[in-house]
Amino acid sequence: MTDLQMSLIAAGGVFVVGVISYNKWQEHKARKSVERAFASDHDDVLMRPDGTPAERSEPVLDIGATPPLGPVEPGFGTGAPAAGAPAAGAPAADGFGESDGAASLAPAAPLPGTTADTPPAELADSLVDPLIDCMIPLALEGAARGDKILPSLLKLRRIGNKPIHYIGLAVNGDWEPIVHGGVYTKLQAGVQMATRTTALNELEYSELVTRLRAVADEIGAEPEVPDMIEVMSEARTLHKFVAGHDAQLGVNLKSNGPPWAMSTLIGALEKAGFDVRPDGRFAMPDGAGGVLFTLSTNVTLGADTTDRLTLLLDVPCVAPERDGFGAMVKTARDLMMRLDAAMVDDFEQPLLDATLEEIAGQVKEFYTEMEAADIPAGSTRALRLFS
Figure 1: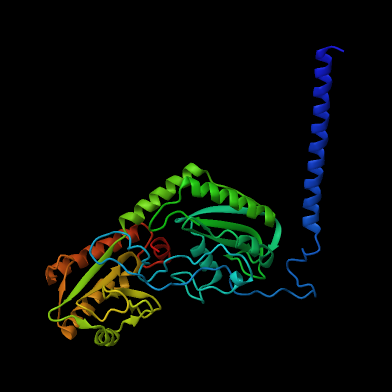
Figure 2 (figure 1 turned 90 degrees about the horizontal axis):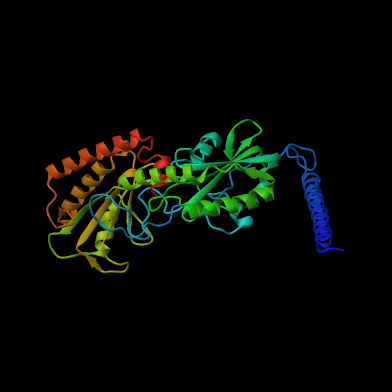
């Protein structure tokens, strides 16, 4: 036999082995699909095992809770809060961890800007919002029950500092948050494209796609992944808007005499309407479960005295109708009289009425810009972006 004949025989053998291996793999894949479709734990998605209709329950995807406010640097102008400082009236994060288990299926706090009574369809619009989220459809092989897919979905709830939410098309034709006991024919995943600090980047998006495909395989779904270039462009544009409207306004009160004793000061602040936080900071409630502005004593927890207070308004997180700036200035003036203090800026210069009126006009212009961008101050969109 010639070398050419030996080579042809060897090549033919390799080809035959390859064909057999490919056929075996296809057979294995088909068998797994059939097993998944007819497995005993895939009972009728609309019925309980006893034949009665399945009941609905409240949303179970963890949407986070508002942590205590951290220290914030005082001052006028724009800029992100100091490290560890969440926005006034908004949570510092979405509360998503990476743990998976029964505990993560417990009822969660409402999304900022929503309440426990918010209709499911409206809540779904807030969770996966095409203006601020990259939306990724997940095509299901068939109707799926919420309790079957939730354990897999809960494995992927955050990429970097960007929260990920899921909604499903229920059998009644409405999109709603995934609930334990719900039945869905389609799913949508949404990753927030920007936060107060960063925009969704290429590495995060690549990780998202990889991990989402793994989750999709577990639940029998196929993700329709948007083009990365388009998503990155939208993310950068959104973050540019957030960075340009990250405004915080501070008003300082400086003692005209000796420093205030903390024991006396706390009582005066409580009488002025402030809520005392466990970390020693104070928040002025807006009467609707949110925060108008905060106050810092500018000293560490446990200090005996302070001679300076800072009231801080997180402008994009307070709705215009709340008049956060006006309320903050009024409170500062009341405290001036009560504590014998002077209202000053960060450079110890007195804040005159004319200056405060000018700032109030700038705040109104700021609110107009946010409204024009369809991200009104204090809205769910704004609270998500400026968290």
